[in-house]
Image (cartoon, rainbow, N blue to C red):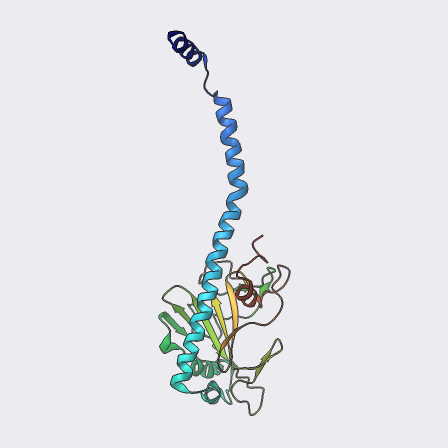
Amino acid sequence: MKNNLKMIRKIHLNSKGFTLAEVLITLGIIGIIAAMTLPTLVNKYQERITVTKVKKFYSLMNQVLQHAITDNGSIDQWSYIKEGANAPDVSSLGKSSSAFASKFKPYLKISKDCGDNTGCIAKQFYYLNGNRYNVDYDGSKRYYKMILTDGLTLWIRDNYNPSLPNQTECELTDAGVNNICGVLWLDTNGKNPPNKFGVDVFCFYIMKNRILPHALDDCKSSQNGWGCSTYILQKGDMKYYYK
């Protein structure tokens, strides 16, 4: 027994720890692995947050629309078009969108209501492929803008077009979808970048009795990204972007 104890002590005394070089090499390897995996983990985390927000917004706005219909009747009877009828200039177009948005507002928890003024949304937006989008949502009176209490921002417009004579509600056609009453945009992180369609900006149609995701099939990294709301609601991920 004593001989065994002596042998163990001898082995312990003769054993050597890691050298400084070995420790540095190990730490370097750990750092390289972390640098390779961390961006993927961050992207996956951000993806889950965005997907959750899009689904939440979609569900919320469908509930809001049903409340609005219950209290105000069918959308095609809301008479918002007449608010902008014979608008003398583009700045007057906001009258019909304001009348349209007013039907939704009572059922939304709003922290900031910009109406047709600036201040609620980003000043510049981009397509999924990185190209600049040349519509000034923030500066245009055509869009009614709001920030919700949960940080989601949205802007909305009706389908009024002064160039179409005798137009009535719910006559808009877009991407093969008919009888659209209005269009709705969501920005999941407010004014913060990247302000890209399909990344943090998503588009929906307001129909007579439901909200639909934008129907255009262009949710690829080389395309515009209008239809990414449909992709997310169908597939539950953003593999088209976070790879």
